[in-house]
Length: 498
Image (spheres, rainbow, N blue to C red):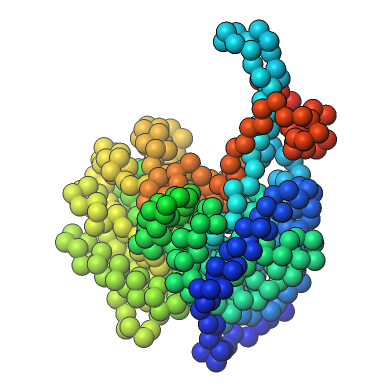
């Protein structure tokens, strides 16, 4: 079905949630978390599937609202909604498979080698408690109300309080209604999922003593402010923030010599896809000086200007682009680095040298969240490695190379210390939801380097370990009972039993 977007200005504004209501929602969520954590794992899995089915059933209505509020294309939104329901169903599969519990059993041993008897100890991961999720603007489905943070937190056995993004409030309301209805129909406890609106409401919820963890996707400034609040509480809580990334790409001489046109075409597609509003968009490209890649980029026809998600993102992009373009040693390679304040910003590629990047990395290795990137030309391979070493934490880093390129072997281990995902001859936009995916990285890419917000391992953010010592079998959680009634993988007396 083809939908027609209309102006969101015609819609009634969504009011901020009163603080008193936030308090009530969080208190109810705390009780719901206790009940949900104790619910059978199979019940939690069926609830996630029910949410996915509810979203699929209302796809046309959801996409219509998303188009009105985000300016994103229908095909992009339908693909993103499909991704959203896929990951809900995938987390249901994760629950059934069971390894996420990390169940460990050490039987009692009277003559344990450490010199004292070993007691019976059984350990598993359990839900951490109510999770506060701050929705993102650039993925109104996959990183928003029913996105990966919500799916993984619910799967882990926690209630979710969802702070809606102001960029798509009506979509957030409708999505929240669908999620709440599906969870209720599946038997989830009342209050297991709530949507709140407003900056003050989100900050108040973050400070609430019944909130046990929080997740955020957005800017460095906003994420760091919330992180500091989470850390300064009387009881600090885990704060999983995805903040910002330049996602550098390094092109070797061998690759540039053999496929310059292909590299240029793919790079531009990755930079300008979704108008450059992707957290994994490559914002810095290192290429050999005077190479065919530079020539191909200089002659490329960039896409037409497209509206960005909202005025705040558009103005932030213009500031970042103009700041980089105004730096000494930077010139325009293709496109237009400035535009009328009322018109959609035009895509642009800027050019500098690797030497300039090395001399002033703080200014030149900076995120431009929109359809622009900086191309830096290097004179020798040593400069490639030098740039890699000066990088801050990144979500991704890309190597475009031939297998025999010596510098690639030198770059790979350096970039592995800087980024959560290192790519070889592929571009970083497009984060597949898989068992092995890693979407995170050292600060400032994220505030929690040991975690991911995409893929099945995301569930571990919202779990905590609990050990049961000498507890009668009948009182133990099912995953730790001797007969293994769930049939899940467990480590028993040090031996993994799949």
